Length: 503
Image (tube, rainbow, N blue to C red; front, side):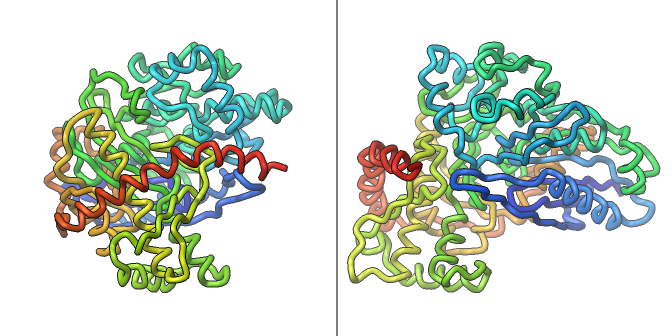
């Protein structure tokens, strides 16, 4: 029997799954690592620890394959927007700066005001924001010129993993398109963006298709994995694109929603469409013929994590705490009795693209208790995702149903909340991890073991369907008008607060 290994290099841990040629899950494993917060707005990770986690889960997964059976492919997913400077030997000279990092806000504002800004956004398919490696590279150039000069390459965490495994600097089209430096349609580094960043093409990895494979492991890892024959290592795609694939949203107009640490809404769209610049949505290649468009939010499950630590006297958040918070929120009526929560604790990406944005409670009175605050926070996250659903519908086509994934699907209450706020039918699918499963499916496709990506639908089983309650949805439509008005009214105040907090 043939087996396919999918690896997802995530924000808090790396996950591995093994599936057989029928798409059935054989094994899953994960290994975590810490986020580093050296100062406000800085979000970093140790790349060596992440590489160790990747190697550990691969080794465990390979040991789980039945003796005599074949591992036909190992394929990769990774979080987007990370940046790692390395020296001429490939050794990191700084920590990985991840998607949630907002230190380059000033640089992003400089780039956004540049005469070529719109040209760059249209070419790259990504809004200008501190999350993007383009802004982070400019930050290094302006704030840490010594590191900038010592840097031989600016790479992502997946590129670092592939360099460790194969000694080559390669980047898939999808991860490259999340840098703000890559021309999505031409599939090459964008000259205008490179000039603005102050680097040449040689400072970046060589772009390749998401189906590109390598099989000549460096001796250290060939020995560690005990691989006796060459196995194709498919470079894979980004976690967002593969979450769509893993949840079965693989045809034109099909949509997936994810809430993990962060969150996102993504629609699969055909090649040849105009980049959705006006609506400030991203556009990333999944394969040569398919794109994934949508928006990602900084503040998903992390909001509940913060509330858990806040309400439980700084204790480490745990499942028991989450269960209690969800139970309290469920007892509160829709709308949290007039309490609204702007959930921008980590600034925000889509739909406002403002690193200065802050978390805000509006309407707080003596009658409001813990449950009201938690419900308002969950509604705030859900309202934000609903804004993206509506942007996608306006840009592309109507959405009738949404496939969901991420840790939040363990809460029927939250899934129903998403259905009621968006007004869409919500499908919960049976899977270990959408991005890791998507990577495994892409490995099947890339090695010719899957006729087409649409065949994934045979593997993805819907385990539960949540229909919106029409009356509750109509109530939320009215409440969303007020929620949607809050950010525009507070935008300038957020910028002022950021300046005050810097002093």
